[in-house]
Length: 181
Image: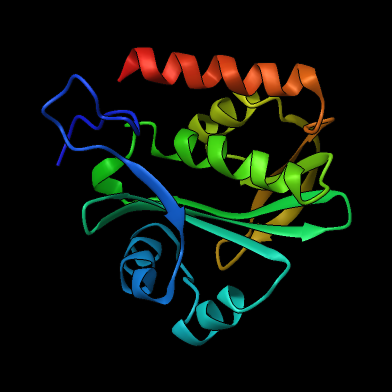
């Protein structure tokens, strides 16, 4: 499946991408994607524990029964920490991660978060560019953060995600996504 469209899917013969809360039925697909992109993916046991925690938000991008990608956020006080963003390699560069971020950030804001943070591989310039579009800026480096290879992580933050200027940024990104679909 290539050439994804916006969530509405109107005016197109291509199926619509939907963003849904991750459930246990999505775990097999999530774990498959993780195994393709992470050297040390999470176990099923860890995934189940994560889904049962009240301080987490997990969403999936789906088309029909296919899971294209997923995102996980830890809510800690007024901070939203993006712990994972994964797009199955078959669907990369089709704005799946953008759709997931556009949905999870307002949910985090609604739960009292005013800041968003994440770590990204120092070599992953494409992901860094995506995060910069969402207003995240580099603030530091975690040396040898990623195991087993010991790659550094760039730490990025966005502040005031609960304010009107940030909501306007998200609206503009969503509009650009609709136009590009």
